[in-house]
Amino acid sequence: MRTLTRKGAATRQRILEGAAAHIREHGVAGMTLDDVLARTATSKSQLFHYFPDGREELLLAVARFEADRVLEDQQPQLGDLTSWAAWQSWRDKVVDRYRRQGRLCPLNSVTSQLGSRTPGAQAVVTELMHRWQAEIAAGVRHMQDAGEIDPDLDPERAAAALLAGIQGGVLIQMSTGETSHLEAALDMGIAHLRASRLASP
Amino acid sequence: MRTLTRKGAATRQRILEGAAAHIREHGVAGMTLDDVLARTATSKSQLFHYFPDGREELLLAVARFEADRVLEDQQPQLGDLTSWAAWQSWRDKVVDRYRRQGRLCPLNSVTSQLGSRTPGAQAVVTELMHRWQAEIAAGVRHMQDAGEIDPDLDPERAAAALLAGIQGGVLIQMSTGETSHLEAALDMGIAHLRASRLASP
DNA sequence: GTTAATATGGACTCGCAAGTCCAGTCTGGA
DNA sequence: TCCAGACTGGACTTGCGAGTCCATATTAAC
Image (cartoon, rainbow over all chains, first blue to last red):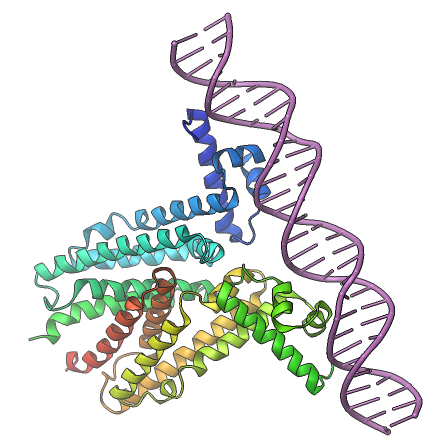
């Protein structure tokens, strides 16, 4: 794949997005290469032309694609956690995003299929978590500078806890279909940040 | 499968535990029925004799098996959250359990394979979450009765948030291999409970 | 001890889905 | 205009793994 013509790039993108859409609807286990071909009006040779390593490479590309969407979907709020109102607005956006997404999490689906071999999938998720945590931590620091959060609180550790709550809330939603755990985790996490200033002298 | 002889029950159990062990090591995607047969010294006909619906039924049985282990592994601490020391002891046990388990979560693996069809798998997880949350909530109520937690706090909601933090911490550990998020979530959740009494008048 | 149900061995079928191959078409630059 | 390399169609191979079948062995109850 030395160079891609405009047409080639478009085809590659069509395959990628078609695979992502199919996975969002049916999960990874319910996706066959032929499904993707049918949905995107392409042929086997095209798929292997743009993804020489076949299914595995395609799944990895989907993982990257979905990982990027996760953070994008939280902007601009996530990048601007500079007031309690902004935090609340971000919280609502996260809940709304995952409520829309429904019971299937493409990223979890893909990574748990690729599993421990193919370290690439885990690397994608790990990087996503780091970037996500960094953005939250930046918000915590900003509120500390504004005197709204106890300056002794470790921003990274607080962000890690909040992030874990989000992940768990989404995971539970995948089984129960309810977002109540996600909401409880976010609300408790934010409440803890707000209360920290009062608790410390 | 009207009645099982003692020998039959033992064989069934051997197959079940063999499958569970294989999944813990290689994930669901890396498990074939022949793998299980080889590992447990049984034959195809035996597997289909005890699990007439084949792979699907076996996976569901593994899910139940693992779900039971999750709560058992937290006892007796989880059932006796009656002092802050007990909470801390439970927290340590949870972290230790998942640190031992490593990067593969059998339950997540199984449910994400069985997916949205086979509602049974989701039901198993949902029930596990409910029981788990109920035990935590009981601990919260106990501490409220003891005057150690703000009585205005909703125990179920607090338990839901704490549970979400645990799930997310474990999920992140599956990618990163680190338990730091799990620890941060637990510590923050418990700290929030402890601080609640001080915050309210 | 007889008999009916239960337990076991292992060969066989069969379909699916990943991946290969080659022949043919299009595109862009010299 | 021409040609090298990019793009496309689709038939074909291949292997794997779930599930079936039947013959045989074992158990338990009477």
